[in-house]
Structure formats: C-alpha cells, structure tokens
Picture 1 (spheres, rainbow, N blue to C red):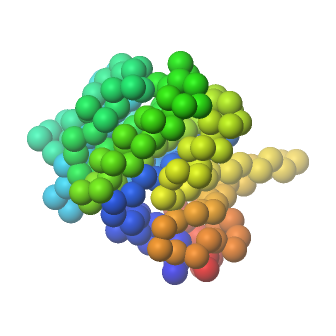
Picture 2 (cartoon, rainbow, N blue to C red):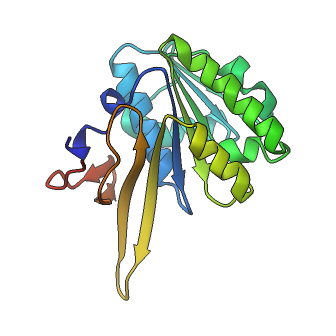
Length: 199
C-alpha cells in the first residue's frame, strides 16, 4: 500500500493510534491534517489539548480546521483520568497525552488507556500525540503495546542537512512497514514521497 494513503481513510476504525516523535512539532501537523480530513468527510472531531484554544486554531487554520459544530477544542486540559469524558467526537485527538498523564503510575496509565480503548468500540478513532521520553520507558512500552497503530516521526541529522522519516511499526489490519518513508514539512502540511512504498 502506498504511504500516501496514510490519512484518515488509511486508519482502521475502532482504533487507538499512537503518533509519536522524539522532539518537534511534526506530530501536531499530522494530527491536525487528519482532523481536517475527517471533518471534510462529515465526521465530528474532538481536540483535547494542554494548549489554548487560540493557539490550536491559529495552527490548524492552515488545514481548514476552524472551530465549528464539527470541531470542538477542549483547551488547557491536564487531567488524564478524565480524558474519556471529553472524547465525544467520531475522531478524538489528544494532543500532549504524556503531559496529561505524568501523575499516573503504571496501573493507572493502563486503566486510562483501557477506558480510551473502550470508547473505540463504536467506530471511533482516538489519536494520542506523544513526545517520546516524557513518560517512563515502561509506560511508553505499555502505550505502544495497547495501541492498535503506531506512527512515528523520526529525524536524522547529517553534516549539512536534516532528513525526516515516517515509521509505521504497527497498524491493525496491515503488515508492518519494511522501511522508513521520507517526507518533508511544507507550509500546507506533510508531503510524503509517493515513490516510496511500505509492505
């Protein structure tokens, strides 16, 4: 399957998708692009974030995301134990999941992930945007194990350039990728090299 199809239509329904990055803001560009695609298809999107509503709308307007009946922003959120109460859309995007759950030990983290997985059973897609290294290694492994799909954004630094790659080590219903796919970040979002393919 061509990675160019890794958009809203390429995500399995009834799924919890982890979108992670070591350092940077590419994951936020990606989740906002997915949110915009979902809205264009008539889906309702809940966007839960530790950021202010104003900051989210400023960033997401490039993709056509504006606050409306189909796009609800839950701003300045930091209580990971209550996430299930705010994921009311067909698509729920949780921007900054680790920061909302820094107080949770392993047992509570698993309970919170299970409550989100239960919400997925009615066809909902929940996306967790995560900065690697914020939570403990054990909690990050639990997040990866419990997720239905994982999309990783990686950066490699050369002597005089930086290269960006997408890795999809896990996606329910699809074989794992056999290589990383190069991409660039442009004004209107992420541009994937469509010549590349994954298994």
